[in-house]
Image (cartoon, rainbow, N blue to C red):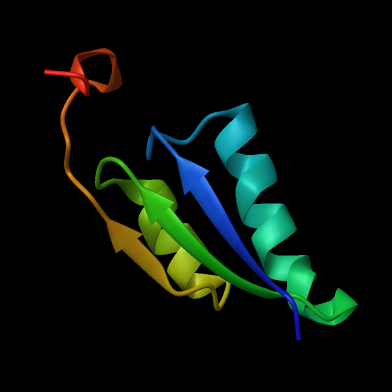
Length: 68
């Protein structure tokens, strides 16, 4: 089974995040094993987990400061 890593910089519930949860929910139906990483904790993390997608949180702060 192919694997895919889903990455989101935001865990706030917005349009892109809702789409990510929808994709995560349906990937296994199409033969994909998904895992997600969020760069912050929030409602979307719980939504991903509720959708059956193992999800990790890497609390890195603001993404524009990753290079520091």
